[in-house]
Length: 149
Image 1: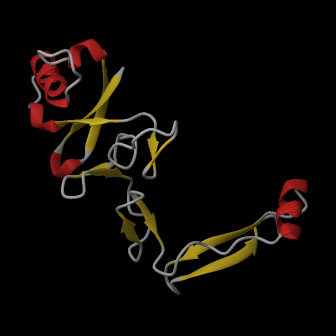
Image 2: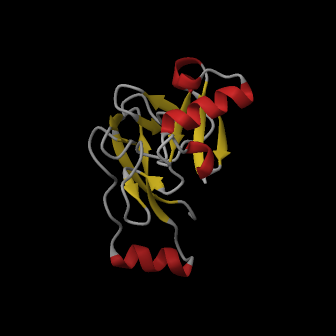
């Protein structure tokens, strides 16, 4: 089965449809995205150019089964298709965050949150504490807290 994102205004994903692989075959029996787009246009009346193939097995620029990733992420309703970078990505979580087009994901301007210590991780697992970092947009820094406190 193949999946296609239906795009609305500004590349926003408004639906995801499944297409049988047999409906993607060109005259030579090879799967072809353009054939799938034309099939969906005939069925739904939505322009072929507004259907973009997406892979159920792709997340953050990696194919879950070791294959070739397709367009950064599996498309979801509300995500954006970036035609220039040929990727799907989610909503920007904070104004200061930047898009990594290799992983099709948002990152803080100072990098990922620091790792918890082994002791903090064990306390989280034991439910005696719930240590975590959260992004503080005002200070542009990671805040550390015990959310069970």
